Length: 447
Image 1: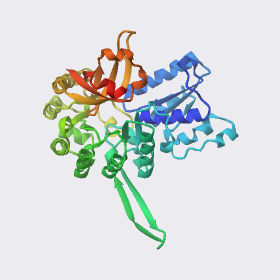
Image 2: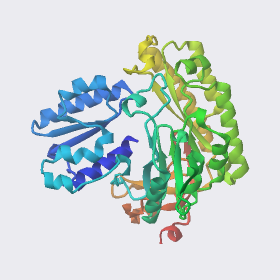
Image 3: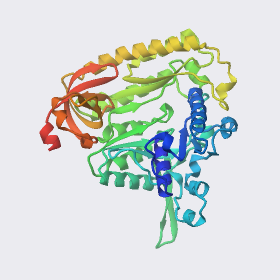
Image 4: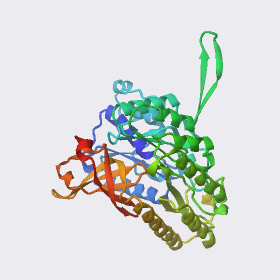
């Protein structure tokens, strides 16, 4: 979501006359779009702000994104402006002083600002902003506010425009995507009567996006286990453009810790949900897509987490066999309910638990990725790496969201124009956090 917001910020800045600087020390204006989920990120922003001011005292600096009220006081001493991302349409009034120029730029709601996309093949499309869950460790409801869902017609319009421009991958974004709901009232103009409400939930939205003509992939993040209905499971599995990849945050493998986190599900319920999702893909998909790739989010060292409770998380890892996990060491955040609890797991113990989980993840991921060896897959090329004139390679992504390093002598004739294209590859090696492959129908695919 921060990356998506940055694309909109870039669009607004360019429309009011700013151009991207080639180097940071050549900039007249620097905008930092921050995240407050972890204290370490906040500390880095504080250091960056001081660094920029020391390098160039005349530099204008703006801070935006997820900024807690308690952090604004100290940041106000460093940054020239602290602007709310939701007020992005009004930024021209704050950044330029010519009233005539200000009148030229009307953007409406900030989510409807036309983004300056980072590339020409993969796009972030926000479907909502904010969150109503109030997980005890999370600042999102305090910095982004309550859940607000975009009109589904605006979302569909944005996706259609992207597909017409040749985009191959669409990410539907929200702090809690599967809590999406959009109510529409339709009026019978002839009888001048109001019809019943038309309610569009996330499953319905997925169907609509899937039905848009074109050759593209659909991904989404981040869902909440409590809002994963049977309807959504079936829809996700049956919509063939929805990729067989899912990030399903569990946060802990212990029921008592989940309760303290204000995560309203039990581990038994989570396991049953995973079982339903995997069964649905086996029923509605073919080949490799019968096996949905599953990643999760985990917090280690939550206040009061005992070694035995951590062992329950280890058991969950071994039982579910996640392909990937984003593991975080608990960081106390002001305003949250957990901030009132004693942070009684030492940094050393948090690091130990982090390492134990990571080691298990590596073993499971390696085991899973080795199963890809010899398989032929369609991937999208996402980046070209050039080490020297004789050694270059592409990085690609599978539909299951696994990174593929493509080693091929044919690539010596290529350039970066092929980034964003689909190509068929054969996997020759599996590593814990990625695959290696070589191209197949190379000439046919590119020429």
